[in-house]
Every structure is written in C-alpha cells, then in structure tokens.
Amino acid sequence: MSGMDGREMRSDRRSGHSIEIRDAAASDAGSLARVYNFYVTDTIVTFEEEPVSAAGMMSRLQDVQAALLPWLVAERAGEVVGYACATKWKERYGYRFSAEVSVYLDPDQRGLGIGSKLYQRLLQLLRLGGVHVAIGGIALPNDASVALHEKFGFERVAWFKEVGFKFNRWIDVAYWEKVLSPLPAPGQTTDANV
Image (cartoon, rainbow, N blue to C red; front, side, top):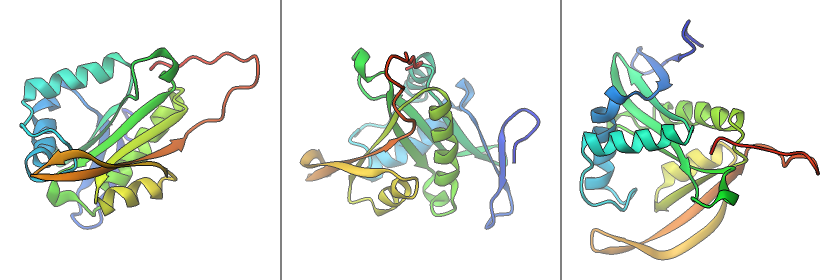
C-alpha cells in the first residue's frame, strides 16, 4: 500500500507496526551505520573489519544518489530497521546497465519479511531506471541471503573459492544475477542513469 507521498507502507504481522519503505535521507546516516556495523564486527557478510562512521556512511549514500541509483530504508515506528541499495557494478562505461544490490537488516529484524519488501521495491526502481542486470555478491555460507536472492529469481553465476579472509579463516564468495529487462531491439538506443 502506498502513502499519500508515494512511500510504501506495509503492516508487519508479528509486531503490529507498519513497515515504511522510503528513500534514504542524509539524516539516516547514523542509523545506516548502526545497522551495517553489526555485519562488520560480528559476521562474514562484509569483508570490512572496522566500523563505518556516520560520516562514512553519508559519503556512501551521497555516491549512490549521485549515480542516480536507489538507496531505500525500512522504518518501523520512526526507527530505521534495515536498508537496501544499489551501486555501480563496475566503473567502466560498458557496465552502465548493471548494478550490484545489497540488503542489511537489524539482527533482531531478520525473518520478518523486511528484506523481501526492500528488495521488491529496489528491483522495481532499478527496472524503471533502465538497469538491465542486478548482481548480488554473497559471502558463504549465508543461507538467508541465498534464499532471498533466489526467491526473487536470481541465479547463481559464479563461485570464487577462498577469496576473502576474515576472523582468521578463508571465505568463499558467490554471485547471483537477475536480468531485469530485455535487451533493446537492434538499432534501438538505450540510456541508463548508472
């Protein structure tokens, strides 16, 4: 259900509170860092090892927005409980129709369908923005992330053995991809904002 301002509003069955999916704002930087830093300090989900400051997260948000890509937050009762974003897959011009997607949730908000709500809206915005392929990189094992990507029709396309190192062990990383839009007809030009 959409609110009057176009924000997505959905009720969470377990808590009774509505989950609002909206564009991230500069004022969210501290909350985004809080959500992300759990994964930095306690998991292999990201290979960063030092917590990211609110200023650092603000810089990342500005980079995504400058590239005209979406960064969404899930909010419950005024508190950011998760986010999803897209970044450029690669800098070279030929990759302009591809984006890497990520989702992060407060650890106590996992399993409530919030990641699905975020991804549903993120993929919709990418499709509308002319992105052809969405790519998700997953440090393994991560059954929940694999299930989320496959739920949305992503297919595993690569598996790199022992390419990451964190918590004194080697970690595999696999990539999932989803084609969002068909190729343009021969002779038709396509432009994306990425």
